[in-house]
Length: 331
Ligand code: AQP
Image (tube, rainbow, N blue to C red; front, side):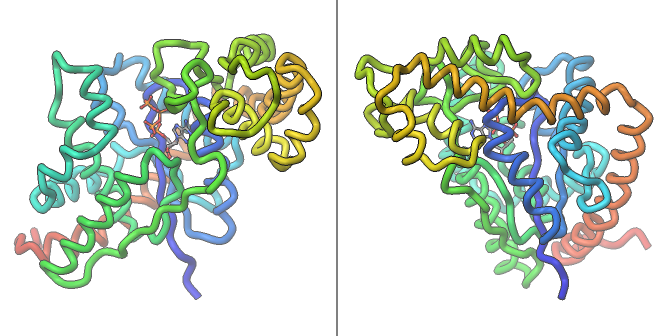
């Protein structure tokens, strides 16, 4: 039986955070044996926010090295850079013509990000979800593992797929999100009601996957909690709830066990232990990353091979689409 298809991506818009790891990368690794997985570094998406070209180049290789360090295996999964496969932008154009402005206007990420770039609001930021739909639909993905923040974009990808299929005849698989019930939204350490984000101006709000031990301990120590003073897992203590979630995902212990372990102890003691849990979880990833990141030839070989594999799959879908909308094949 053919394996079901998975597609997902990460933007090379900065160094990756613990939120990216828990909400996405960690799950990417788990899916590799069962599914035909396609993992992309979405550089075309990254430029919807201003990027320094030299940093974008280096962040793209950082994300690739981080994929590998986390355990994504190029023998099992297709790993590639989005701009290497032109079919993404080509399909996005076609899908733009069947996506409603009203629907894009309602996207929370657009509303939030456009507030931050009011002066130079670009059309790419507005149509970002259409490119994301193209990414997913090109590979006929059955499943898309993402963090909770991407749910709305995925809903749009589904709508667009259904609309195209209804208008022209069955073409796209309608994708399903794979969102873990637990850890799908890791919150900012400074503002536990907003998600942890790599582009947050406040560096204490996130833990980077490559933060050193001292930095990790310090950021956790400074994480905002509350004045209740008792380790508990409730919505009234969002800072603590977030820290317990991180503890639970990385240690494999249940929330209940963690609350029982710390209910008689201080926040300081809980945070000290959490620091060690995070450090221990990241240590093997950091070690592998350091081995891989400077091996340019190895990284080049991976992304070149990935682009060829991805292109073959993508072009098949694009050809079908072009035929259905009425474009004449070049021959
Ligand atoms: N805080 C989070 N908790 C759980 N999952 C998260 N993801 C991101 N933040 C969290 C998931 O990581 C994947 C890659 O995200 P992305 O880099 O493509 O874009 P994003 O969702 O916009 O992530 P950031 O860190 O907030 O990036 P910037 O600051 O550049 O916009 C996605 O699956 C996402 O759900």
